Each structure stands twice: as C-alpha cells, then as structure tokens.
Length: 375
Image (cartoon, rainbow, N blue to C red; front, side, top):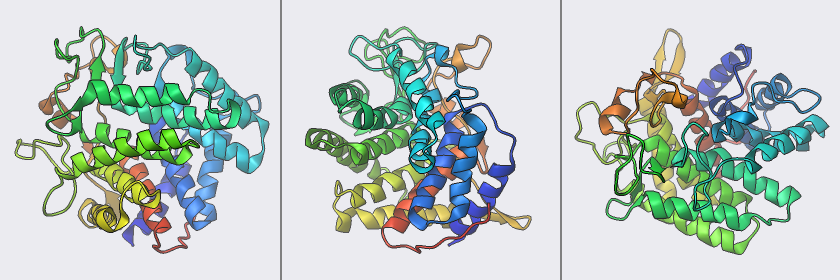
C-alpha cells in the first residue's frame, strides 16, 4: 500500500527534525509509530519511539518542555509513551516521568461535577479533545500503581461528556462545554459550543476505544463500549456517500467551503477497526466500513508530487476561545465558519498520526504483516 511508503518517508523527516517543545501532536506521531512497531516488529518504528524518549526525558525523569504549572491536559497526552518506553528499556527515568505527569494531573482544576478543565486558561471548560489527552494515561496509571481505585472518576468524566455535550437529535457531540456559560462561544442556556467539529469527535472516539482496551473491569468495559457504539453509529450516518470520509463540520455537508477532512476521518476509521477487534462492534457489520474509510484516505488524500507522497486535507488546528488565553489572538468562536477558516495543510502531524494508528489496526486485522522502513 502507498501508506507504507508514505509512513517511511514521513518518519525519516520526523526523526531528522529539531525537537520541538513537548506536545501532544508530536506524541501522537510517536504513538502511531509505536503501534506499527508492535504490529510489524519493524525496527525503524521502534527507533522513532526510542529517539523520542531520549530527546525529551532526562536521567532524572525531567521532561523537557513539560510545564506542570500550566494545568494543561494537552501537555499530558504524550505521557502514554512513557509506559512503553519503561517496559521496553527498564530505564527509571521513564518511570519517574510517569509519576511526574500524574502528580500534575492530581492538581488539575475540575468542574463542579468532577471533570478536568481543559486548561487553566479555560476555566470551567471541558473539551472533547481532553478525554483523549489524559484519560488513557490516567487509566493505565490506575492499573499499574493504584489498584484501579480511580476508575469511577474516569468513567464519571466520560459520562459527564455524554450528559453535557451530546446532542440527542443529531447523535453527535459538540466540541466544548463551559460550566460557567460565560465565554463568548458558549450557548447561554446550554453552555455548549455551536457546532460539531470532526476532529473533536475523532479524539472522543479514540479515547473511548483506547480506554476500553486498557480497562481491566467489566463495568468500565460496559460503559465505554456502549458509549463507543452509540457515538460510532451516530457519526457514520454523516459519511460522504461517494468516499465514506467525513466533513470538517460533520453535519453541514452543503456548507460552502466545507471539505472532507483527513485527520478526523482517520480517527473514525481507527475507532471502527479497533472497535471490531475488541469485540465492541459487530465485525461483519462494521469492519468493511472502517476498511473503506482507510482505503479512501489512501486513494483520495495521498498525492504524488515532486517525487514524493503528501498527505493532504488536514485541518492544521482547532480550538475554542482565545488561543491559550492570549489576548490579541484571533478569537475562535466554534461556529462552522470558524472551523472552515482554519488552515488546511499537507503532512500535518494530526493526520499522519491518525493514519498510522488506523493502518496499524487494519494490519492487526490481517493486512500485510511485515512493513520495513528505514528511520
């Protein structure tokens, strides 16, 4: 498949790039490489993960660029990689890094109903993204170090998102909720943001199936599995008839400028394929849908130019309110027009990572088992 060549070329450039500040989107790329290593055994993927660990975690477990004082769940997402790095290398620095991130999570501000704020600069706000950023890390920590004592807290946060962000008529989730109902994008009656952003839904779907896989409890599996099936069924009804892909503003296909977005579509494919593997979704009914989305991403979104492949159609960024709360930045009001105003880029990390993750699930289902890359 073309994806094999694309991932090889992409990771070659990724490994050569100057390390950026510790962040979630680079961590997602490395997590995609981890999944592909676990599936194929190819050393090139493993080297990407090991290099990431060496670049960002020192011998004392200090994480370069991690700022606990920001109380930002985005900064915690890449902590998931430290579990694999510790298991593989047995180096204590990764264990120290895990506990350092958990220490920060214990101090994360919460809403009155117990959900983590997305960031300190967004008081009282819960975003779909935040579930993926922190809950899989949190659940793994509970398994390893805390006898699953805080499973009820984790499940409560998923239930809160269903309660406050789910639209019963459209069967989709809004991007954000403001408990205070004060910020400019929040509906003054419901506290919800105005529209349905594809990648926001994608983060939520991936959080559900990842936490289901990590969980070691029947009640957790029942809650997470039911939420995943409901959310998958909801979003699949909005798939483009010709390709099976999904629009940036999910339910507004007719809106001028709306487009089939790559990263969120890949996240849906990942969740569907993984949901089948885990037994949450009925494989005969759903697997072909996930495979169709993945095939369409390869045929519709990878372009050959200048002697190489490019992954196209990726929303570069998306959020709500002032970016990181900084005055003077363009205000992100959560409207369909806002989401369509964000830059669309080639080879953005969100899209490359999500495609690697989805492709790894396809491989686990019986695709080509051996994929060699040169890092």
